[in-house]
Image (cartoon, rainbow, N blue to C red; front, side):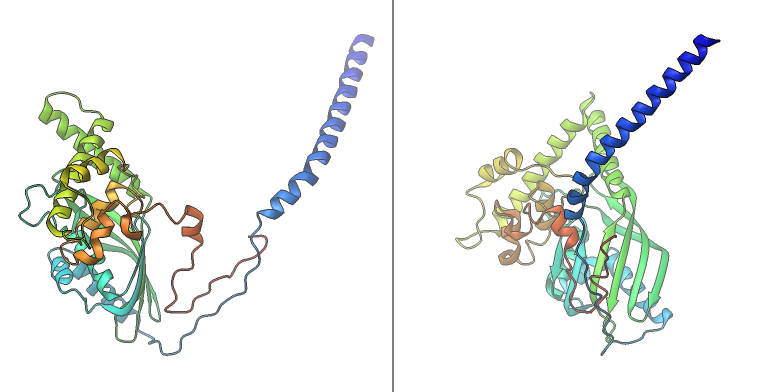
Amino acid sequence: MKVIVIVVGALACSMSVLASSQYQQASRFVPHLAPRFAEHQASHKALVTRNDSGEKNFTHNEIFNLQKKFLDNFIAPNNAIQAKSINSSLLADDVQGRVDITRTFDGRELNTEYLFGLFANLVTSGTDPDAFSLLGIPTAYEITHFAASQNIASASTRFQFFFQAINATIPLQIQTWNVFNPAGEISMYDATFTGWWQWAVDLLLQTASQKLSVAEGKTVSLPETETYLQGKLATSICSTAQKYCVGPQLQQYQNASQCFNYLTTQTRFGEAYELGRNTVLCRMVHQNMVPIRPAVHCPHIGPSGGGYCVDTPSYADTVDANYFSNYKFAYGNGSLTG
């Protein structure tokens, strides 16, 4: 019995010492952590209120019909018609647009090209035998969620995209936030591909790998598939460059061979979110617009990236940017504690 008491007493004493040691250790570390945490706290920002001056207060049905009108024209073959119009009447002259997997776009002409021409896949619809793209063409849509207030529409839309490269249709969910001016034109939009976008790209590559394996009669790995696709895209982009980017002001590469070498050995293929970075995937996006306005878009498929296919800004700068300025919103409604 005495042995048990002694053991229990010793154990209690040890626990007391341990607790005291832990407390002292904690008291040493907390003061050091506090200043570091404070350094990372966001500074307080004043609330900027909305400015409704000159804006129209649409009804819910009016906003829904404006949203539907845009989506109807986003679907093929209407998107190709809009793209070739150069300046879509659906967009305000000073429209500002942002797509999370690419970049920001200013003005009616540029947004017409990227909103409609990009997904019309104009390059692959031509006669160039080398034309190739991994982009899909929207063939149908369904608005799954919709909310409207005054001149703002927030929607989640499920699209069916046909990917010619793998001869398959894949559904994609896109969240959109649109602002309409009094004329019913989109003056600002923010489009976000849901987290399933990475999954969709993985599925696209896996399907391509399976089809290549069947064609080759052997297993073609995903890295091998990516290398194959990068070569196909490089050939297509270089063909576009050689055809449209000619002359001292527009030429991007010395010849097709130098172009192919640059895009396959000096430029990375790109991740799903890098359609606006220094990647082959970004140049794949921009090759669609080169035939429309070579003077504007040739630099985008060249080595410099033309300010669009470049590795700036950083992730933090991209997320922190207050891009939209056509309309006052509650920017800066933050707090010290988050």
